[in-house]
Length: 266
Image 1 (tube, one colour):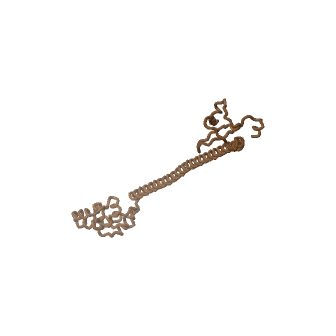
Image 2 (tube, one colour; image 1 turned 135 degrees about the horizontal axis):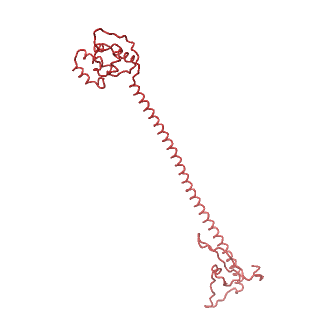
Image 3 (cartoon, helix red, strand yellow; image 1 turned 90 degrees about the vertical axis):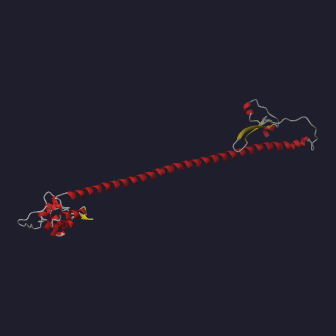
């Protein structure tokens, strides 16, 4: 102002940011001093100048009190200060609005980043949990497969042991009792006695139906074990079957055997 009043400058302009709304602010260049309308040849700069309303010369003539000079001396400084103060307020409002919008955008971006990173973390955590579950399931399946294979091997070994017959069976410890003139019976007619079991019984001196019928289970079991063979589950019915054969009751023997299930009483 002092430089304008002293004549060092001819014009004074105020450049500020005009606050339109929260999201819109635009730069403005307004002629401040002298208090007259200004025209600029630069069309680009002219877009930022506010238009000054024209002074009407029509109408009634007014008499002012106090005189115009006193009024102007009071109004002009106040109007000049008001224009400057308005420019300051417009700029301050524009600055605070821009800061608020920037902070809100930053907060929204931070929330979006937090949501994105949370999603990425959850995906990574879920993938880790899935891998652990797969490892546990895979280990359990591998263990179960090993158990199944071992059980199958044990079953095959047991079946092999049940069917295995030693190449050189031990001689039975039972003393052979041979009756002169006696003839050995076909003990294989007894259910549960096969050729190998028949050989073991003959080796123990039990070669007739009568001897088999008179022999108790403990003696039969000892004779079988002495021959290196496994215990037969049908042994408990041999003496009864042999009793039918001793009496020549073959029909009764067949009827009795038909009541047996796998050589044992049902």
